[in-house]
Amino acid sequence: MRVQLVTSPADLRDIVPAWDVLARHSLEPNVFYESWMLLAALEQFSTGQVAVLLVWQDPSHTRLLGLVPLMQAHSYYKCPACHWSNWVYTNCPLGTPLIHRDYAETALLGVFEWLGETGATVFSLQNVAVDGAFFQCVETLRRDHALLLDVPQQWAHSLQHHFSPVAAVKSQTLWPGEVLQLEQWIREFTQLEQSGWKGWRQTSSAYPPQQQAFVEEVMRAGALYGQLMMVRLTLHEELIALSLHLTGAEQGIFTLQAAYNAAYADVISLTATPDTTSRQIATLHLSTRHRFSKPLMHTVRVAKSVYRYCTSSHH
Image (cartoon, rainbow, N blue to C red; front, side, top):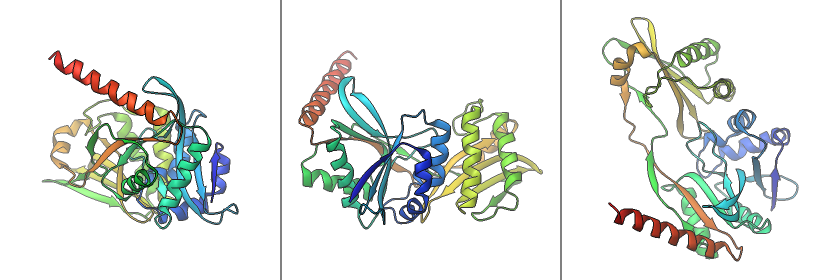
């Protein structure tokens, strides 16, 4: 096994074939860390502080077993520490690393061995589903290596949203693999997005140019990979809403963004369908083999408990 930290996007592009194979065999799907999407995010949002950790089966790089984008901080809850965490960018609600399902424990162990070699004090995983196979793998690692795992809080998050046409509202879908009218759909989405109303968030501001460029790049890349799906709603031939969805390499479907016509806010509200497949998401904090790791995490636990007690006692 070989673990490699890559800081150059150009070097990452060289391993895209192996990366795509890993995505098709990942323990849990995460389209937000697939090659075509993460490379677009690095181009638009990275400030040069993001690196990608690769776990290879052997030094000759015959098979990629794991991939996780990382950032390093020098504090953990304001305490000085070598603190590594996965990178979650704008529009990235899920931070589960890509881990090969046939080598999951080996790949995860490779990550923690690397953390130990670099002197990491704490490792955090943001926006990870705690009701899936990856979290179970983390639990196994914790038990086998006597690690400390802290999960401060969990929340339910819907990774997919739906439209349900009502009355005279008509629905049309651009299915994965359909590219003939792609540019027209992109233009319509961009125009609708720039006009303003954000349906589920109830805000009236369009995304900044940097984020808009990311979304357009993702739409084109997703279409090339056959993983883009778009749904448009019209009322009396006028476009009122358009949503952007991405499918995983092998399974899963994720909603990236939706744009709405502000003039039809009431109609659009009627078409929004509550999602029943929400996941339990959390940020995980894991100790390492650093001798100060567990004492630091215990100290933070106690400090948070005291703070909660003091604030609650004043109410």
